[in-house]
Amino acid sequence: MFGLKKKHRFLRFVTCFIMLVFSASAYAAAVKCIAMNSSSTCVNTYNQDGYNAEPGQSDWGSKCGSVYVHGVSACGKNPNQSIGWVTDSVSLDGDVSKNTACFCKLVQPVVSRWVYAENRSTAGDCAWWCQNACAGKLNDTSGTNQTFHNSILGTLFE
Image (tube, rainbow, N blue to C red; front, side, top):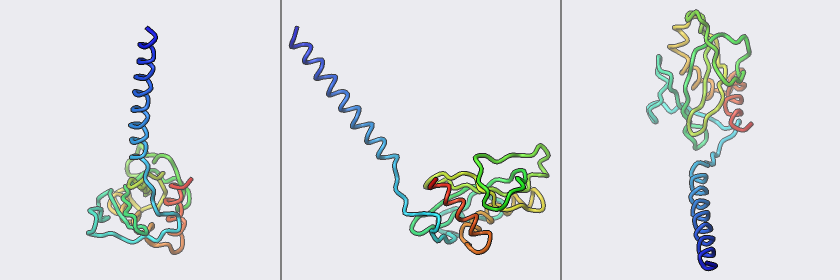
């Protein structure tokens, strides 16, 4: 009887050890180091990664340092905030024609929060040009674009 208890304890130990190893492997597989910060220089990746910031699409892409980043854009209600304002969600107006504010979000290799990029004159204009504004403002760090650049990359390091 005593030998059976030791055997059960040993099996429980082995089972727990195996679960720990597999859990640690799964955790390690989900962790990714990215050589990027809010001062990283970004450039357009037109025709290089499939996210070309073409008018009318929501996907866009850039290369920041050695890291390719992909993002999505969305048009929502004007938040009456300055460019670079950060939010967890994009609010929509019940009147679709009032969704003229362009918001951007990184989705690869990491997910950022939504960042306000600009307000367009019409909802159609926003839908057509928003993704281009996202890529453009990330890549061009002059003027208010610097605020947007710092905001979208800065949300990764909060």
